[in-house]
Figure (cartoon, rainbow, N blue to C red):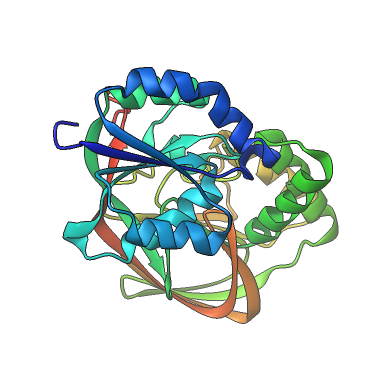
Length: 305
């Protein structure tokens, strides 16, 4: 971090089921000790729009999102709206319910452990996805994936639970009550595929939903998306497939197809819900492009990236 002099921490108080500020207060002395030689400031985000604006306008060398995937995604929208050479170094201290963006970057769970790893970290350039007018860092998915993401938000508010088990609970409920395939016409680097799908996931990193390994071989800086589709199935089989996806052992199942591509066009038979890093969107037509090495991020020395 030889070029970093100014560090800004954006704390999302709503992260971790509303415990974001408390978690920040607990590790603040540790942060100040680890980064004592830098000029630091802390800013609380108060809305999605506020987080995007801060990402777009803050003058800093290193921007740390103290948050879950949602606020990290929002801040990234602002950072990526800047010209390429004006984007600050960016990273996340994961305190949310899923933290798949942090997993893709090799950042450990737990705020204290993440801060310690990042204090001696290194800068790398990673790929970013663009879907229509929005960016995503880790995942874009459709079908029951997006329905599960929506159900996860609902259950998190109702139960206060988080992580892998929360997503699994949501997945079971969606499969039991809302198992509906959609006809998909996908054009991936010029190759056309048509399927009736339950799941279509476009991955930059390997996991979604707090650790479901939907794309085991995905790497966030290899210049290609990893795409996984799961075709229609009965409810019992769909439940079984989710257990295989959780472990990343699903790719040889006969209903599963995997692809790699740089540009993708997706057309569904009806308007449907999508999710970008857990944030919802709707539509029937999606233009998806990978932006190679679009974001400079701070990762631990041991990240393996």
